[in-house]
Length: 429
Ligand SMILES: Cc1ncc(COP(=O)(O)O)c(C=O)c1O
Image 1: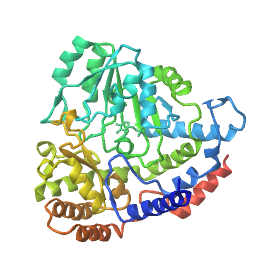
Image 2: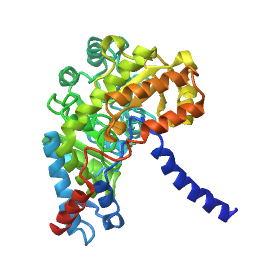
Image 3: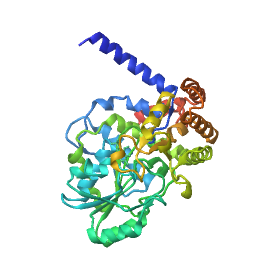
Image 4: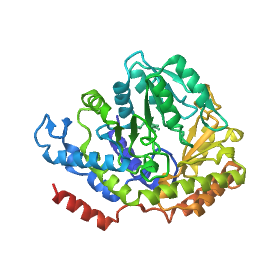
């Protein structure tokens, strides 16, 4: 092993990663950037500590201040989402989903989930969280026209199969799922509704998407780092009657220590969303619609023309005519536009390597201050790219130029305020 070379490669990778993202348009729908205030907490001593168990009932000494942080995190989470109960300990969305399946189902029970091409996440299926609990998953009937769950067919199937868990929420998530209708069906068959809000948590916090709790979902799981601009971790919201089951499924079920530096950072992200969430979420949806409309106008086959393209942070485009999602996503990466290939509802799993679609998320560029005008400029670059109208070098320069003015994080506390917040936070402990 050439250790010197390994170290040089490592150093270069770290520097070049940051340089690449500085000069790129980040459009991965599951990512976001945290503010400097959030990062300040992320780098605190909390990251070196352990806190197993519940607030006030820990197994190690030294947790008295951490207890305060977790208590604040729970209170803010309940306030923002209007939840009866919040568990803020899961360290990722998948961890939260494993815990939710343990709380809601026994091995051998049935669940309904969206298939992966229709937007379901792998953790809703047997490959991951559902399978770990031994739950047998049936895909919801899906309507490719409305791009949503077919309620009539779902009801018929549910009366026959009697699933214990109805999973809603998705990774490819353009339009709100029919929570109320699914809750009614679930009640008929004595099932529970588990809504995975990972993608749309920030939109829900900002009042720009439907509210799954108000609409009757029993459990809401969510990662905190997609449209919600927090550090990478997750939460589980539930009604009071499920609190004990959820809490014990989380600890000792799937976490021991729960990454306290990111918990402290999450508190700051909650404060930012209380302050700026409304305007941030509004602009995200405006930007997604503007991008979808311009891409469509230019000639892209944007998914959902008959239903208004999107109501979320995402836009999906069928790029089969340009060779499919794989070569198109790789070409965009060469010109510094970062997005992912994606299965679409009309794909089967054999198309996983090269699906029909690409998925675009505008939550991060919105946080960097881009508005409708930039969405139009971006659409033009993308159209010229797929049609080979300019060289990749020229297109990359256009991307770098477009990005130049958008390198600071908006909808966040100013850095000077951030330090004041940090200070008063620490003084309060
Ligand atoms: C709907 C949904 N749930 C869960 C997850 C997993 O979250 P994490 O990566 O935090 O485990 C994702 C990831 O993108 C997702 O899209």
